Image (cartoon, rainbow, N blue to C red):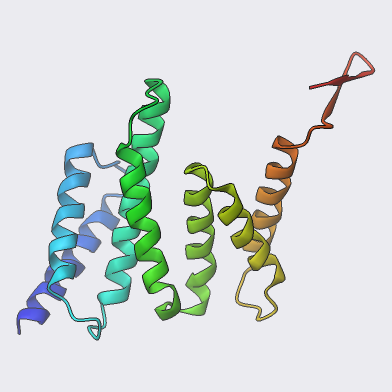
Length: 176
């Protein structure tokens, strides 16, 4: 009965957050939703039908909070700020924990999110490995959009790190 009530509360929270997508959550609301979702998940069993989707939602919220904190850190030129790092690490941990339990159609989205989090965190080697694994996969679980996005991400990385980049300025090649 307790699990049923917690699951009902979780569904209502997710529904409420989905219906208010037009409005972005402020920092305080975001912290509150994450805290409550963590409390609910801590009382769930791994066998609960909503355990995996609840963890994915928590990881999504943490990733979004990490993104917003990272943007604030960049704006403030804060070199020692670590607010986004902890959220990013926790989101990656949760995504990794539930990846094998997710539907095939959702794995690509989670992997791409994980690669993006690694990339923003400065671990481009792990991000590139994920992108390359998406491209190597022959199971057909990844959509053409996911494959294209992986190719673009890899191409962007190679372009950004190329030592031989050139740009055409007024009809002449110029080193960047």
